[in-house]
Image 1 (tube, rainbow, N blue to C red):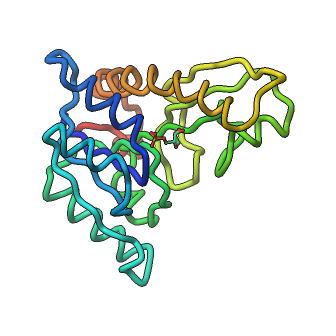
Image 2: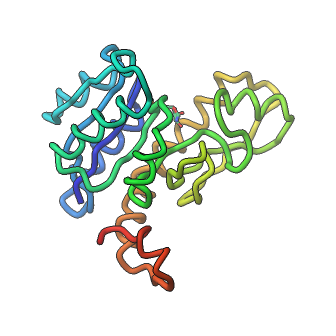
Image 3: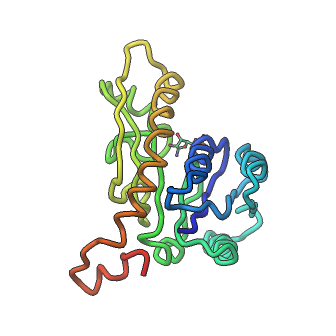
Length: 205
Ligand code: GRF
């Protein structure tokens, strides 16, 4: 399965996916890394691993739609079959999200559906919860609201600030994302499809 990874920054989750995909038994091949920011640190790592990269800045476009059309064109050039978001900080245009529906994963550093959106670790601290974690979920047009694929939990300590909690969560992110992608790829084709509507969600076709 040809997988493109979308990043905007550091790319530590991307690294773990690239490493996992080196295993000959891993069902994904990372065919490209896309960033909307030229200064994303993860780009250099991907290149050092021999993976092609592309940068298209959203700032060069008038609308979300036109930027997403350019992104889509790049993904088609690569022949991407599945999109994995790893710290990608842009919201997709509806048309793009509909086209790729059922073929997109994201990781979010909270136990969704709690603490969607920005600064979820600080949200968790503000709420006073005693456990936190990470969620790999399918991407749907509504932000951070797609069905969870895999979750992992960590304790919240009294001494935590957002940075220490984020670091603890990031460790489990790195554990579950490669597993979740593998499981997602291996499970999808076997899904039972009951209705015509659901057929559009089946991947691969
Ligand atoms: C991770 O915490 C991820 O859950 C969130 O953004 C962060 C990206 O980190 N969506 P990295 O770029 O993978 O290091």
